[in-house]
Image 1 (cartoon, rainbow, N blue to C red):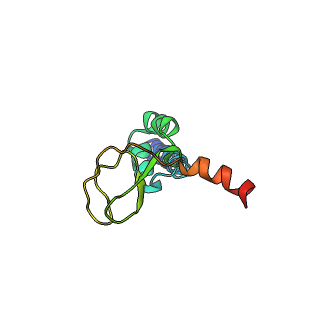
Image 2: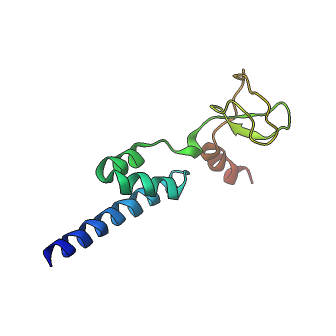
Image 3: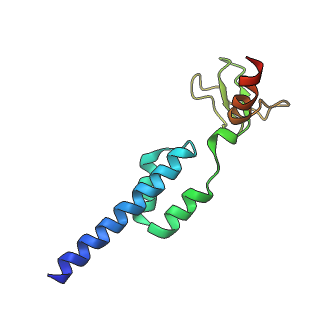
Length: 106
């Protein structure tokens, strides 16, 4: 009986770590499902990695010369048109800083 109880408790603990990592990853702009899997498979280190991972909205951006889509600065290819992107001379401010500046300008 204790083996079943221990298995259920361990499974519940993995599920809790998975949800915690998924929520943290989603808050930072990444995929909930991917961070859920990472945190559930590697409980303590997965959650710690999700906490220390960068915020996607803080990344610099640039404009694709082929289709004018705004993409992250670190992207090598445009996901819309497939244009290979060289490192630009000018970067666009991150989305998080643009949101801060917008309410005062409106």
